[in-house]
View 1 (tube, rainbow, N blue to C red):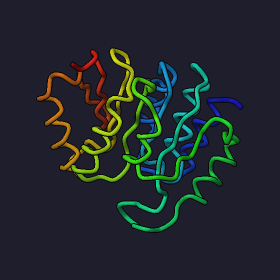
View 2 (cartoon, rainbow, N blue to C red; view 1 turned 180 degrees about the vertical axis):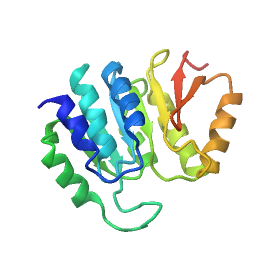
View 3 (cartoon, rainbow, N blue to C red; view 1 turned 30 degrees about the vertical axis):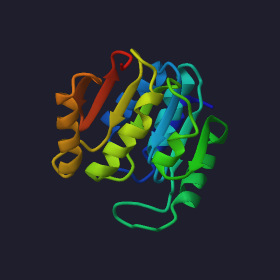
View 4 (cartoon, helix red, strand yellow; view 1 turned 90 degrees about the horizontal axis):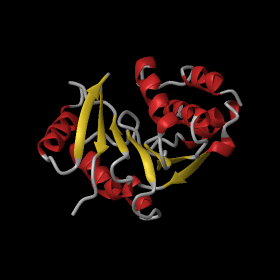
Length: 191
């Protein structure tokens, strides 16, 4: 398994994740301390990118959480067979764990402080993103964990609104906005 080939193969899969965003996600996965979670996997581009990064880093598995029956464009269409085919074609089945559940329900399977990286790219409403944040926040490793929000762009004002709210809440950590993503670094343990 050659991580660079997996990364390149990712861009054969339909997605809105750009090459520049992919490079950032790759580096974050490569440097992640702790488990990696992907909330919203759709057809698998971000899965391949995160796995490729993890393979060059600590070689941890990526937990891919999605119902695969929801998409902002085609609600209730089952995308899981296509995701699974893309994972198999890239030969990374042993490096990712599909969890076919709602993202907030799936969070309950994990204890606190387990994840070094959580990529949030599931349902694109303010309430869904906020619920993902609240369900997964305590699963991040204090002082090291990163939560990355995709689609922080004009086309998704509800996500931008949530990120603006997060920026005003000083207790969660620092936010860096780059390439249409917001990267929240958890800076301390909450009281």
